[in-house]
Length: 357
Image (cartoon, rainbow, N blue to C red; front, side, top):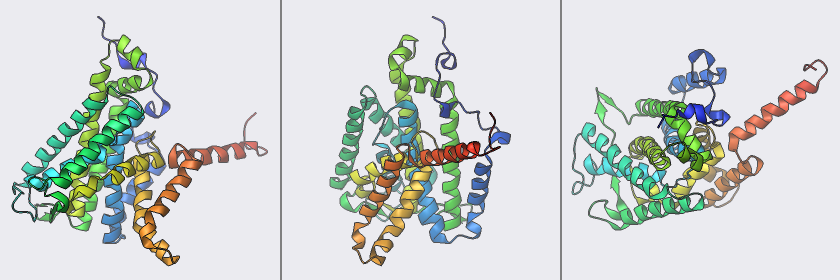
C-alpha cells in the first residue's frame, strides 16, 4: 500500500496553514510583545511578575494543551488541569515538602522528570479512554476522570495527605539561583510558555498535526486513506499532557503548595472558559484568556468591595465578564479583534480614494 502524505490529502483550516515562523515574517506586534515581556522585570513589581504574568502563563499553558486537543483534534478535554495537578502532586511526593511522613525528598532533577512522566502517562490513559467518543460524551468522560481524581486525593491520606495536601513545596536552588524568587521564576515561566507555544505551532503544521486536523474534519475519510485515527488522537493527548505536566510543576512552585482544590471541578471548568474566551482556534488565545482571567480573579474582590458589595461574590463578576465576551464573540477575544480590524478596513475602503475599484 502506498504511503499517503497528509499534506497531499488534507486542506486544514487557515490558522494551520500560515507560513512557519520565519523570523522575517513575524508580525511586528509579536516582536513588540516579546520585547515587552523580556524587559518587564525592569519596571514591574514582584506581585505583577509572579501573581499576574507568572500565573497567567502557567494557566495559559494548561489551556493551551486543551486548545491543541479541541482546536486541532476536535476533542474537548476537561482533564488537562487534572494532569497538571497530578504532576504537582508527584513533585511534592517525590521531592521535598513540609509533610515529612510522605515526601521522599529526592533531588529535584530526579523528582521533576518522574513527576512529568507519571502525569503524561495519566493524561495519555485518560485520552485512550475518551478518544473513541465524540462531543458531549468526551466532555463527560474527561470530567468524570477529573472528578474522580479530585475525590481520590481528597479522601486519600496515605499518599496525597487528604484535604490538607502538601505545603512548603519550594522551587530548587540551581547555580546559586533560587528559582522561586520573582524575577527568576518569571523568566522560567516565560521560557516554558514560549516553548510550549512554539511547540504547538510547529506540531500543528507537521504531518502529524495535519493528519490530526484531518481526523477532526472527517475521521471516516482519514481511516479510508490508511490513517490510524485512534492512535493519532491518543498521541495528541500525550503531547498535550506533556505541556500540562510542565505547567503543573510550575504551578506547584508558584503556589508553594498543592491540595485537592487545585484541580477541583470549578478550576477544571475554568480552564475551558479560559481557552474559549481567549480564542480556541489559535495558540495565542489561551494565554490571552488566562491573562484576562487572572486580572479579573485578582482585582474582582477589590472592585466589589469598592462598590459596597460582598467581596466573596467575585466569581459573579468574573462570570459576567466572560459572558459578555462570549456573547459578543463566540470565538473569543481574538474574534472580537478580527471583527474590529475588518470593520476598520471596510470603513477605510468606503472612503473616497480609500480603496481600489
